[in-house]
Image (cartoon, rainbow, N blue to C red; front, side, top):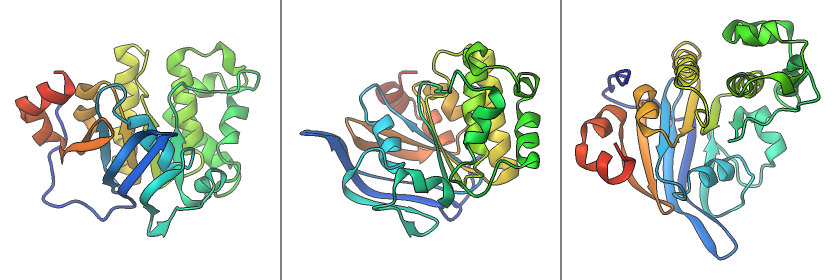
Length: 248
């Protein structure tokens, strides 16, 4: 496992703040008073077992699930009542689990969708930057998306999200079903984006060990509640917490 980033003495000012967020599906409460924050230039890993509420958290932040309580703010703006379609223009991008691409469109056509409704068209410079980050996509730009491998599809959906120039990137299980070598490439890229561009990332991962290897902070959910909130290095070093909640 790669070493965790050394913790700093104080967190940066957050760009995304979630306060006492509760949400559910009918009578089932999936989130219960969850609070966390994400700062520019940092990765916040959200960890926990299946059913802990990790995916629901991201879906609620991005407006796909209506909260029953609490507050979400992005760069000081309350997101309550803001439609999912309007969030990219405010600087929020969500890459859900599943690597969804439009198979009948080319790689470049899929990428260009990332700029629709965001902060401008997909400029040549923006596309060039995505191709620099993901050279394999440049090689396949005119090919249909359905021929891409699982790892290439993951790169495509992340590239599509980045084309909207987000302040905050929500990532749901980007390593799911991928070979360790591809996971390492994607995680190294995330770390570089955070370091070089000041992007704030909220990373939901079942693979706690890999997530904490690149994260600055860790938040552990259990049955919809926050049970642990620590910097990543401290969380990795606490054997009792790791064994109790993270399985390694």
